[in-house]
Each structure stands twice: as structure tokens, then as C-alpha cells.
Length: 251
Image 1 (cartoon, rainbow, N blue to C red):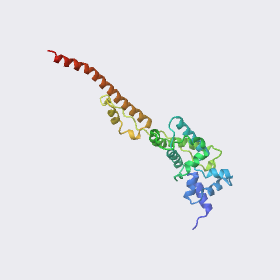
Image 2: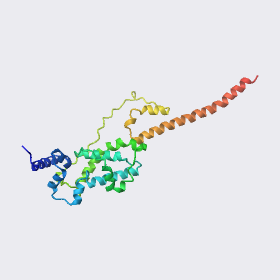
Image 3: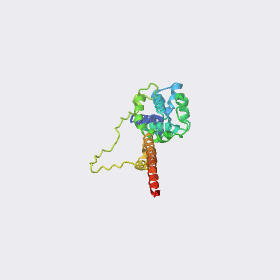
Image 4: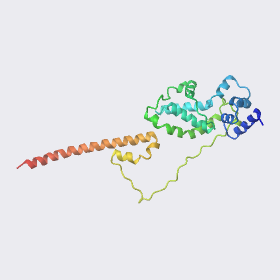
């Protein structure tokens, strides 16, 4: 028995009320997103129809632009892959698992030219390379804030009843701290830069890039200090050796 379009639309409405995004609901039931939107809001103006085809609400794009500006002011201008990864994580929270198109980032910059110069063109800097994972990881908490802002935006193309509820911010899952007794605490002070790097080698791949840079600079500074101490000791020992040599030559 063939299912009519009205039945498919009604089923999509039910999924949207249960938390599925409009895009995901339309894809699930084999109908276009524009068809589903027309049933929700009725005829749309040309401007609103264009906004609807975008993957993000205008309020979400404004939030992302602010985030890019904040990162740029902090000296961590995000790269294009970082922005795409951040947006992809936000979309997945709303049930939209489709990949962004190859031209999405260019269209995003065209809509928001003020952030175009802030987005790194390559991953050449150490900060950009190191902060990719951290930027995407924090998108869960930022996604909650974006979801809350999007519900109140007047430009959103879906009514409030059809929007999925915004998930509450969950506290971070941290294992309980186990207090060690004084007898069990063993602390070895690193004496060389190599000691420092060996102590953090297991944590280094997942470490915050700025914290990792602190450890690296500390290791280098320790090696420089050791070199200065060795040079000073040699300067002290050289006169003593000369005196001993002169004493041995005297009859």
C-alpha cells in the first residue's frame, strides 16, 4: 500500500516533536525539507526560503562568528577545517548527520565577510595544528548555548512547537580523585629537559596545546640552565687544574 505525502508529512511532524531536526525528519521519510517547511509555516518569502536552505539558523551563525572573533583575539585564529568540524558537531546534536558540502565554508564567509580575514588559510601554525581536537571537543557545551539562542531567534524557520528541546548542559564526567598517602607519593624532580618530556610523553598527544608548549619551553630552559652550570663548573675547574699542573712542575 502506497503511503500518501500527507501521511509522510504527519509522521515527520511526530518525529520533530520527539526531538528530530526538520532536515533529518524530511530525509527519514523521503520528502524534501522545503515541502515539510511549507506545511509548518505556510508560504514563505524569498528571503526566508533562502535562509531555510541554510544548515544553521542566523542566530547560530552569529554565535559562530563571535566565537571565531574571540579565538582570533586570543591568538588562536581557527582554520577552515576547524570551523567545519565545529559546525558539523553542532549539526549532529540536532540529528543532522549529513556532511557539509565542499563550498559551505566559502558561502559562510560570503554571508559573514567580517570573519573572513580571521579564519586561517592553512594549518601551518603550531597553535592551529594543536587546537583542532580541543575546539571540536568543546563544541558539545557550546552547542547547548547555541540551541538555547536559536529557539528565541525571530528568523528561525520552524515554530517553537516543532523544534527539538535543547539538551541540558551535563556536568563533565571526571573520575573521583584518589588521595595517596604520604608513603605512596613518589616525586622525582626532573633534572634535564629529557626528564620533563619523558614524564609527559603519555599525556602529550591529548594535552592542551598551550600547556604542552609550556612544558616544551620548560624543558629547553632546563637544558640551557644545565649548560650554563656545566660551563661555570668548567671555568672554576680550569684554574684549579692549572695550579695543580704548575705545582707538579716545580722542583
